Amino acid sequence: MNLNGLPLIQEADLNDKVVLVRVDHNVVKSGVIHDPYRIDATFGTLFYILSKGGKIILMTHVGRPRDKKTGHITIGEETSVRPIVEYLQNKLHIKIDVPEFYAHEGNGYLSVESSINHTIRRLRSHEIDMIYLPNTRWFCGEESTGEDYERFSNQLAGLADIYVNDAFGSWQPHASTVGITRYLPSYAGFLMQKEIENLDRIFNAKQPFVAVVAGSKFDTKIDSLYALLQKADRLVLGGVIYNAYLCSKYGVSIKGVDPSDVERAAEFVAFAGHYPGKIVELPYIVESDVFGDRVEGKFRTHDIRTLQPGTQLNYVLDVDPRSYDEPEILDVFLRAKTVFVNAVMGLVPHFNEGTIGLDTVIDRNPHAVKLYGGGDTMQELKRLLPGLYIMALDSRDYYIFTGGGAVLKAIERNSHSGIAPVKALMELKSEQERWKVRLSR
Image 1 (spheres, helix red, strand yellow):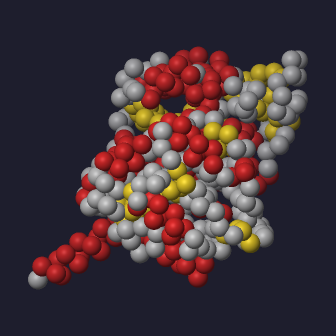
Image 2 (cartoon, rainbow, N blue to C red):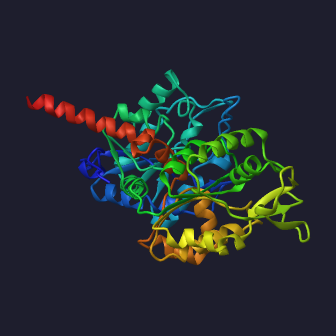
């Protein structure tokens, strides 16, 4: 991937500059870090800034403290950056300060208050090593539009001399990822660059290219599924997405599958008719009488090839790993030259066999590039196959993206510029180059 269209951190003069770095450290669930991979992946950028004499202010979002229906923002320990700060302090042996602001009931933080200036002075005088802002989604302007958005973007820019985006996984066009680029010299960090370079292994995939996508709602991934159906040589579905597909194609009923998902799946099945043979149907599915728990005697395996129209099933919560032993299925995975995975095949934490079988059969292929995307995909690989996960981190044949949603968004648009924060950086670079031409005349 040619990175010439991006302003790169290597091009910035960082000496004695305050550098505001947007990262995707969204790894906290209920106040606990389950996998620090996305934190550790940003160390290259942070060390580089420090080595060049820069002083760092970090910011990330954590969870979803804003209610989409009411707009109410809840500030609390569950979405705090404190566990991240503690991890960084213990890991790097540094002192990090987290400023506090006045919280307006239901509206979160209305602004970045001037009290932070004292903390920045302490940063400049080396009394502290870094500043970590509170959860960006605690600020009302982060996910807003109009005046609140612009004010927050401007306030963030007022904290620093330079902005660096190293948050590939944070693809939404928010103030801290897009708005700020209009007010500060802005650059892509090393992780952002690495993720974009690996996107090229999807856009220019070696064939056969096999994509595996699962999810809990069909409509959240429908656009990327259409794109992958056209781009990939074979497409494998899992989770509720696969259940909805089976309901639509075979006329069966599966408990818990929303009718709207079945309707969307019907449109997808019709579209897939233009690409015969591309969708790989895993034949064995696991039906459970109980949702969630794996209760002995309460679940069973069905062969979809024997299901009759009108069949009513209880919850289908996994793919039976015997599916991957079928000669035609096994051949698909072993012949692949590129495999992209954004999938957990079963309902965690009790239905794991389908995911274990998938990751194992993919690893059996020594010739394929294996690209994993998504927090859940990564977390389950680590939980279920820790040895494979550790090996994958250092293998040239594997790459684990820090943001599955960002990868899918790029696939939808068939370009890394389809990710709004990346596009913002590229537009800034283009504008800077135009000014250079004008000044040289």
